Length: 288
Image (cartoon, rainbow, N blue to C red; front, side):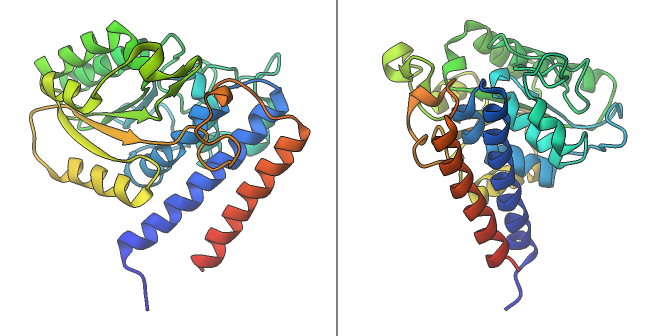
């Protein structure tokens, strides 16, 4: 039986997400530094938007009316670098220079040095504010483009996030899409214990945003949510609250806050590579 167009698209996205995860592990292991946990949990959303929704051109990364994506949780740069390389912005082998002295691929993304990076980020909360500014600027310039922002749930503890959310709703930035990578963990442990962010969906709704919630590691649910946003006429910005698993895709990292900013030793690296390579092969076999 032939697969429908939607299912074929889901197949492509799942494979891209698996490859992003594989390269995340390669990057942080090569550098002996980095943030694998949150990079792995947001891989599915990155795969969805880069495979199906972003109007971009790797041969013309400065295209003025392109869609833009801001990784507000900039410490998860390994995932962003991986998808950019997989989409042709620079060679895949460059990923192995992650965090090396002289490499353009530093621990937090720089728009001055890395093609495809739309905003330099790192200080939590500021990337989201920049995305709101981009949405305002695009409207002023009459560009019919979309602005995406990816936030971590620990990042929501920053007051600047809610100032930006209030601004976006006030100006009716209906071509702004935020994705909250709600994995429940941050560098010091469970977000509920460190600083409880509460019911994130209700909070954004109170700030007059359209709110969608889904399994943020389920490509089918993510594509359905994104499709709904793009088909629906609204005068509000939209947030997708994605319930995810920190360290998704690597068995010993899943749900463990200790992998927020730790890197695997040689034995752990081999285990992670074995699991992720097996997943990629499985997807390739199933989708032939």
